[in-house]
Length: 462
Image (cartoon, rainbow, N blue to C red; front, side, top):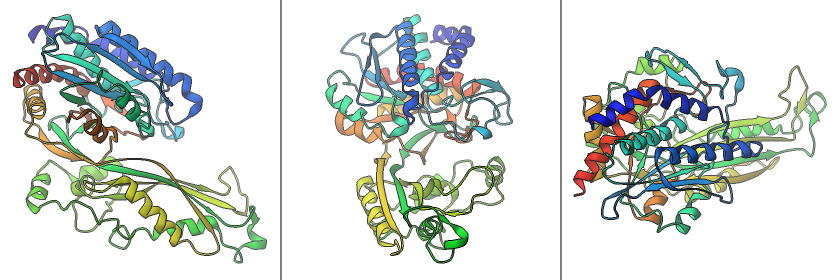
């Protein structure tokens, strides 16, 4: 392991330069005009897997964007780890809020990242974290230190719901056979407080459209006499929460897991400074469901949020119209035992029911994913715990995370194996937002830690 760590130290600049090159490719899976760039990003990581020493590397087309696969099978008798990640990224909008070009990576020091951070779309979610695994694999293989079999499955549709990965997994079930799936698409509490994610919220994502008159109308001639779809949509959305920020959709909380008081107390022992939290976000006060702490609201409680809203004239200057239509995109984060399909149908029924007679409403389903809780008594969790304790010098804290990785539940159903969620980003790294970044400390710490995971896991599986 000393040779592995020495190799990592000697090659830090090269590792970083390669990642920066990958980050220049705008692999935006949600926008069809970037299809060529998504394919280019897939080809890039496939080439780097081959260079690192992976065999049987292939780029497999799907009904959407391709899946990249590679492997190194030393001995079928050894345990096998399947590394999962994604090379697609979120759209960078709104572009005017970026301090630098989203696909021209720059390194800047910040208060949280005094050693510097890479500012670029995908730097943390998930290209930077995927690349940690490729470089950790290279470092072990170059020093004959790999103690287990490794497989890579890197997809290009995670940011749009992984719609085609299930079919890929079912069609390649034998090839993907493994003992555990290792994922770095999550965060740690802080650079001095490591943590391992033990739970993820699920997701139900919908789009709604409210239609009023058969055309845009002059607001002076018709205002006050005809319903304005923008106003009505806002009223309908506002009614989805009560004064305690409780979601008002009937049956929404029916299957929500009740977390014990003891577990809630343990959860709230994690380091958290409300003042720093507010300062980092530039807000004066937090808002959330009554009766729960901030840490609980973003992990063990379901939510409903508007992710985008539009209608009418939004260009420069003024245009006085009553719009014919107004639309919004809405996501609901779900907790254990909530079924995304059931929640989507509950939302659809309720939203259509509360629509007043002077508009018509359409609800379109996008994608979803099941919530996940991972055990903490498995060899993979113990190996991750030992690896982080080794490199951080401090035992990691188990924590549930508010985000969603829809494919984790599917992996367990199709492949029959558990996942370990060992991420290295920070919640403050502006994932999905302008000025996304990933600390150099975090990038290199991941590359240093992953080899220890393989070593400890192989020992624990003997």
